[in-house]
Image (tube, rainbow, N blue to C red; front, top):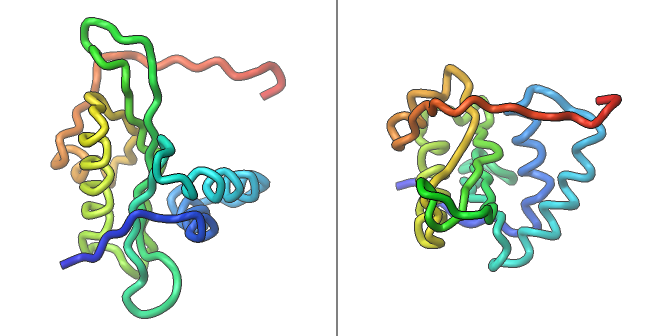
Length: 152
């Protein structure tokens, strides 16, 4: 049995550390990200949540899944207008292949379900795609577009 818990504000630093594992990058975005997590995870009614597995052999986190709910205008295929987005799912390399990411994702998906979210989006690496597929995610036919501010 894997012990999953909802992350609190005190987990912000570790969550950002796991984000660097996922993104394989560090930079000036770590400090603002930690501040956002500390502020938002302190409120259980916030529309951002993280579910984590503590390291079984010491301090810190072994794995996490972080997501948020966005309220959009409803449409024919999205009657509630509530959309979930998974920001990161990460497991420290030494703790992989134990089901931790799957357990964190399952907890995050239950959180979405309890709040009436009917659609959840994420971006998947090729290595993670089988996990997400097993959890019910499918590729969509909607092309994504993005505008970046000038100079970015």
